[in-house]
Image (cartoon, rainbow, N blue to C red; front, top):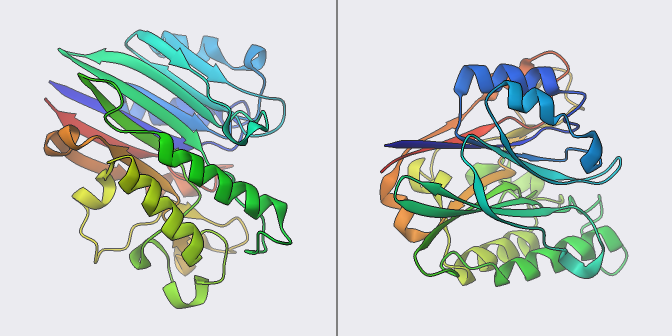
Length: 267
């Protein structure tokens, strides 16, 4: 059987619901994980998702900021909302569902952006980001016996040289500084996660999932970064059959600055 999961920082789900509808009709993933939904739970457009066949909805939202949501064609048998750094931000949502004979835990994460100055001594937003990725080390890919795991979302870090348009020019820019990259890779390794995008796409190939709104012509300049990630427990890596980055979505009307990433598994 085939199983498709997509992740997308939508940058306001209510504002961009027409784009979400277009994506779901075009791609039809089994599960969609959204970040930066920017709405409280009672204002989430659940009816629109149910109309499209996504009857099962888990939400962790807050007014105007952050927020994550996971929608699925299949029911969840467990939902967990974790508070990172004891701040109360809606940045994590974990769901568990059955895929054929397999049970799969899905962590949906929105890591703090970290502000502009990459110095935790003077920038509390950057300190928060470093503390957040330190706590991510506690999320284990094999924490539940007999359960496969996925960790997806906007992790706001592009860890490798081919994850950014210019490694040299971005070394002191938040999202690609050594301290962030090292912290994210520690979280990956400590949790025994596989970076499924890089498992499927050769390291020498550039991959971007985000292009700044500041660019006059994002496609022509192509100054992107891979800020959105799909990690999996080791048992899922052999079943991965495709990774699709829908770059064209950056050019849709009133787009998010991120594009959706879809992973397909064949079990």
